[in-house]
Length: 322
Ligand code: ADP
Ligand code: F6P
Image 1 (cartoon, rainbow, N blue to C red):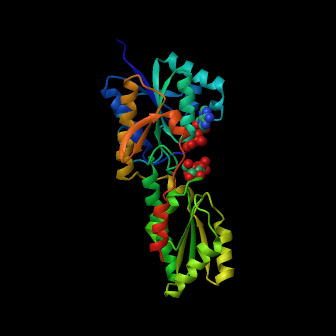
Image 2: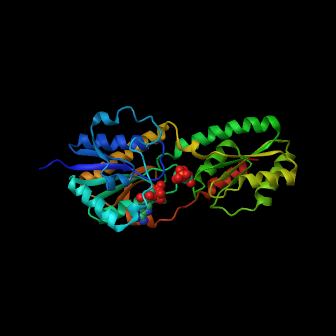
Image 3: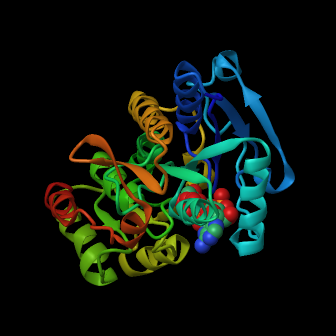
């Protein structure tokens, strides 16, 4: 029987822990007797032939590195059917039977298209946003939250020293999870997320006034990227309440850095699971975390799911951050 060949790529926004997932795919594959190829710069690597065979040492010393050693890209070209057919032909020309795609739900749509073109693909959730409905957890989320936590803690030091209000925007595209978790962990007086309808007077101004009455003079407001407008909010708070306010957009600092234990471990589990599926000749699945366990789902089913925001946690945050 000829040796099975698989490949791995990272796609969409990079996330801490992607390297740990790549490492797991390479090593689990080689340990099962497979040849494993790294595809560079997302789906573009399949269109440009930018691939390299990996060995056990190709992924040495990367588990603690942020970013992705395979680089990543957003490939508009790959959205076209002709490009997907060409990518599948390229895989066949190299004997590659399966591809592990580490990325977000956009990348999973690409994986579904490549599977339809004849190459088994398995998705592994890798994005700081935690915005993939089918999985409780996405690789990179924990590291990003901890980075945001450290940054907001630092901002709080200076806000406290000046009796100011600091408004901090955290990433998450249309998902409020980073804001919610960071907000509760830093004791933010208000947290604004796209999933919960808000009213500035009720949910920001009144909360600040009520907190002021208890003697507090500095405030942190955490705002999700999907809500935005932190500079305008700072101006409004200054005018409305006469408190000095400063706005900070944390931005890409949240995407980098050495992955936490959780991200390294989950990435290793998910990468391993992806290889097990490809080894059985199974494709068109996404590796997910459900009830804290690593399992897998059909890609179509996974992409049809709707995210559920943790309203209970939001309620807790609002009740304890006063
Ligand atoms: P993420 O994977 O983080 O959600 P994107 O939405 O930017 O990021 O998607 C990453 C890449 O996945 C895109 O640049 C494209 O190459 C591929 N992709 C996204 N949507 C599709 C689609 N409908 N069909 C084929 N490929 C897609
Ligand atoms: O999906 C990860 C993410 O960092 C989002 O939180 C953010 O909206 C987006 O990517 C930023 O994308 P870019 O790096 O292209 O500016």
